[in-house]
Length: 89
Image (cartoon, rainbow, N blue to C red; front, side, top):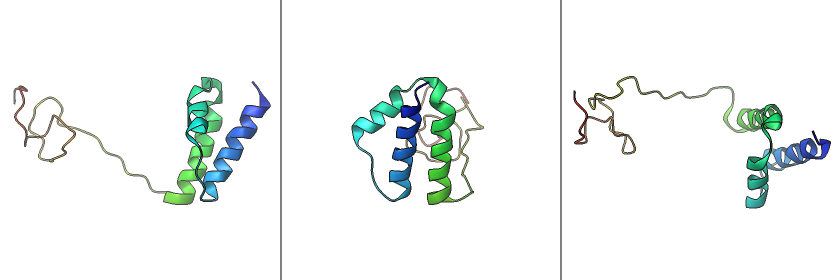
């Protein structure tokens, strides 16, 4: 693996941690990296998350799958009971 890739990931992480923005080409480069770099990318993302969002995370899950009877009214979700679907209750 190329050490320059690790250095570039660190540089982009530092830019964001300092409140800056990265360019679209940088984002595309990050997406194109081989999976071997994933642990390093995740470590950088975790540093960014902790800096801007803290230690707490929110988890969302759909427990009422395929019934169409979910009581939530999420506009993006076909499982909501508020929409007419072909799903059998």
